[in-house]
Length: 458
Image 1 (cartoon, helix red, strand yellow):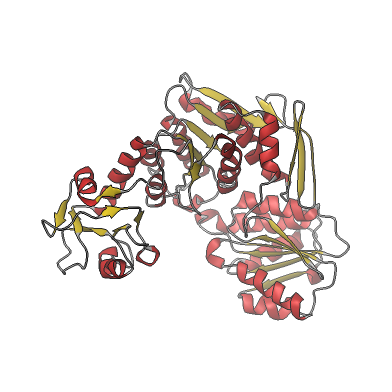
Image 2 (cartoon, helix red, strand yellow):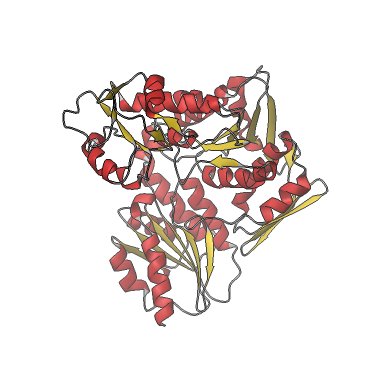
C-alpha cells in the first residue's frame, strides 16, 4: 500500500485516534503479528482463540509500529497512537477493501483442494511478463491472510494473484466478495479439509462459490474434469476456459511426459518444459497459460517464463544428494495429493529402492480411516518397494498396504518420528529415492532435515 496518514486510515475504518491531537504518522504497511512489525507499519491486534492481539500492542510499538488498531476494551496506555474500533477484524477488512479500490491491478483469485499455491506461483511467474505485480505471501489465504494480501497492493501494480482457502461452509462467499476478482482459477476439488464440511458434496459446493465472485466480463478457469462446477454460474457474461489433456478441453496439453524433475508438454505448436517433479503440476501450468492468454501474453512468452519456475521447499521439491535422492513433499497432505505422490514415486527411475515415508493426513473427519487405508493400498499398487508410515494412522496405512500385496517385511509403522528414525536409519542404501509427505501439523520436514544430516555424516 502507498504511505497513508493514520488519521486517514481512521476515517476509512470509522475509528477514533487516541490520544487526540497526536502527531499524524505515515503508515507504510499493515501486519497482525507483532513479531513481524517493521518501522512505520500499522499493527492490528486481532482477538484469537489462544491469545488477544491487543496484549501485544506495546511489543509492536517497541519494534517501530507507527500506530495500532485495537478494540474499545483495551484499557492500558499505548506507547504509540492507536485507532479504537469496535471490531479489529472488521476494520482490517474495511481497510483491505479500501486499498483494493485504490489499485487498478487485475485480481486473479486461485482456490482448490490441492495445488492452489503452486498455481498461484506459476500464474505470478507468467504474469510478471506484464510488469510489476503481487501475489499472496506464503499461505495468506484465509479471513486474515487475504485482507493482508490486498493491503500489500500498490497503485502501480499491474496484477495481483490471490490465494483463497476455506476450511468450512459459509467462508468462501465473503472471501470472494473481498477479493472481487476479474479472474478465478479453480485447481480442482478433492477431500482436503473434508472434516470441516461433512461431505464431499458440501465441500465442492463451497469451492464453487468463488466462481460467483467473478465480475462480468471476467474469466473462469477450471480443470476439464471439473466442468460440473460451472453449473452454478451458467449464463454469466464471463469467459470460461477448461484446461486438461482431453479433446473437450479449451486448452489441451499434448505429448505430456515427465522424467525426474522435468515435465514436458505441448499446447498446439508451443512446447513447454518445466523443472517440476510429477504430472500433477500440469493443471497449474495450463491454468497459468489460460490466464496469460486472456491477458494478451503469447504462449512463447509463457513457456519462457515457466522455464524459470521452481517449486518451494516442501512442495514436491527434489534434492539430489550424493548417496540418495530426497523428494520433499512435506508441506501438506490431502488424499488426492498423496495419491499423486505415490504415482510419482512409483514411476520414478532409480538405481536403488523407492521408499515412501507417510505421515498422517488431517481434517478428514469420519472419512479419516478410509482415506488412510486408501493411500496405503495405492502405495502398494504403485510398486513402491518400502513404506514407512508414522503417526496415529500409521498402522492402518501399513495394514492396507500389506492387504494389497506389499511384502510385510517392507512395511513399517511408527507412532513417532523418533521411532521412525531408529528403524530407518540403518536401512538406507546408496541410490535410494525417498519421498516424504504428511499433513502440516505432522512437521514431516523434520524427516527431510534428518535425512540430509544422515547423508552428510555417512
